[in-house]
Length: 233
Image 1 (cartoon, helix red, strand yellow):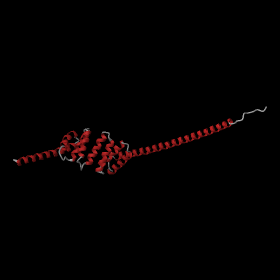
Image 2 (cartoon, helix red, strand yellow):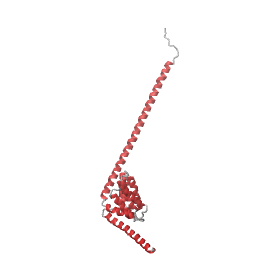
Image 3 (cartoon, one colour):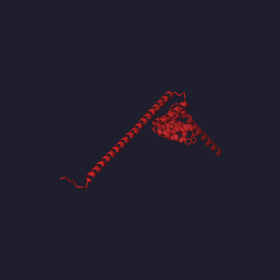
Image 4 (spheres, one colour):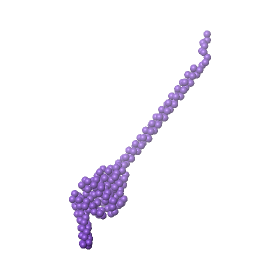
């Protein structure tokens, strides 16, 4: 009887394992067919299993992104990261996408950076970090990331567009530098003019003080006569 119970338990375990595998397989198929609403429930079942395949977390996170469930996507991707090894860069990358869609570009930059840290050749992370850096006005960083993307993907269909963006950013940087130089020159000129005016005012006050002192001294000498003025008779 005991052996029969063990056999039943083993059979149930195998069945559950097969069901989990089927959930991942079917969920992945629907995901690749661009059917996130149908794929999500199957992937939810897959990630609920202990030791879930990392891909299930990635697929489910992307499904939630496609369905506009950004908070749920962020939560799933973070959970997947807690045990990720092979697909860590994908989880960080998609979390960066979530933050971009939420308008949290500084956080997105950090997440794309983590993806790059996990895989330095992960080209999409450079491209999207560059875009996020443009939104945070880090133009120099954006140009560096765009260039790195082109180095990794020399035949990319996006190359003309990326090169145009680089050109515009560099032109803007040059214009910003010119405007900054003009502003600094104006500031220095204004300071010099102000100092010259202050020096002129100081000199004028000193001259005025000297004249006042001279007049006072003359008056003193006139008032200093002690003898009474007498007229000849």
